[in-house]
Image 1: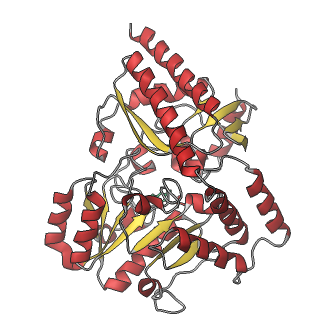
Image 2: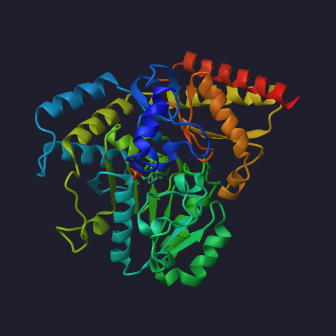
Length: 430
Ligand SMILES: *Cc1c(COP(=O)(O)O)cnc(C)c1O
């Protein structure tokens, strides 16, 4: 029995499903999840000491790769001076000033500890600001696991094929209206009917939780117009895309300015940190200035903030996003060539360093297309790659992430592994 298997059995007796977040359990692809002992650069090592090229990157935060020396150094330094105070520190100002410079729609922001908290609080704020109760989300977008947002959610909810979660009161769910990604007509219809009651539209400006799905040309700016017309707020959930697709996130890429933005993942450089921010007049409704309550014992935690500041500093280096684009392009081209050579029908969606391979479909522009992909084939792909030393997200509905630590040779190795797997599939078919 492998070490991972032993550990998984032990874990399962004390932790539901053996994991502290559902997708980690590999339900969608089968098999026993690897227990990870350490990471270095683009690599992770399992409990057996086997090495893998990692394309999960802790689900997005690790844009610099594992154990980047600068991050290790600042976290070590900070830890030696005390890990938390529950009082304001200078470092929080530095991070806030940096984020506000990089993401111009954010005039003021508040730090929290998870993306779930960020979106939940942004919505509370939007409701308080507008005096309305309804929100609109998009089928397949994931905004964390707070009650009102667990309606038609992507990520683990989609991976496990769960209906909207039990435990969410129907009354809460009723306040959440669902629209369809890249379908403006439906959104307009929802606004025609409920516009006066809609506090906010929340959206992943590039969907990353149904696999990667890009917004069609004009989709986001049209949402901006529709929300403005009805005095509803627009919330961009950039927990994945913030600092991933550009320093200023997807809003910089598509030149659309939301009222509120949620950040997380990369923001904390791999430590628990997230934020929500936006227009000053909205943000100042928050306690202690205004009446909207929001708080956190570990909010703005010095370790996480130090890792965040150091990460953003490294990302401000010149040509970082060109480099990520070049790596993404190399991998996409390589995989696409193999697909063609081995005559495997599939489509690849990619924005910069985030991408998804959907098997058995030739176009994925909304979550319904994504759901039609060949999930069994994905499972074979996942395990075939794993066997060859490549660690991918264990679900067809997640993005794989490339980091600055992935070398060109890592990507070539990944493409080679894919070709070998594809070849083996071919002989199975015959
Ligand atoms: C990961 C994610 C969240 C939730 O963040 P957590 O830190 O896991 O709570 C919210 N929105 C999006 C778009 C995400 O990808």
